[in-house]
Image (cartoon, rainbow, N blue to C red; front, side):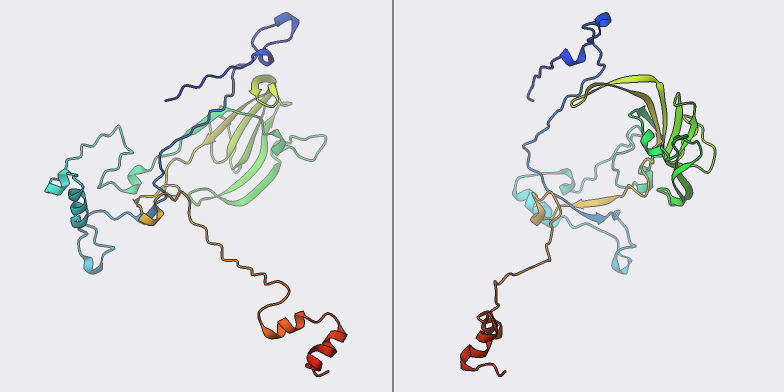
Length: 294
């Protein structure tokens, strides 16, 4: 492990106000951390469908799936490696309900699914995304800046999607939704459905530190989102197979099928070569002492 020390000049983070001169105004500092590693990447793998031991559905003649480790055992034995399974010993796997993500041989993919849960945090406001063209009422509750009556969520369920202001008390506070379910009344913080919900108030500000802008005051904004969790749309169970020719290759090979050959002013075809020597009608008439019949 390498210890890297950095010094931060605090002048830009201290108050210049005579009443609070020298007091720290920043509550957080952004420090870029650069990670490096010198280990060789094994490369990408080839994903294959997971077939449990004894499966008959994907095998011809409904035969049992038995793995032949003969060649692997010979190679391991040749290199001096010994494992219990080589002696026919089957280890006993102790299951622990506290670690549900452990890969057990007889587990199905459904057992890895986890329901979504609320995600909250502080962020910058997104008022620009719910601002309308009405100069007298830019933040009009119930007016959809964007809408889609046949939107689909990750489960394929159809719902009415919209980006709109929910409530507005002269921006102190204002609640709004982006790409959320607008079909039913929504109570921010308690009835989180699809989309991202925001609670912004200009009466309260929050101090942030930005490397380019320095110390900045922004409206206090809370964000609420209901995550999807792990489900059939973002999880799969498969074997990771390493192919020898892909060892060390960290990205999928790209094939460039477009080919353009520039042969200059003429090609190797004789007639084209002849025309390449002709510049005007006089050259065409006199070429080859009357080669062309005009």
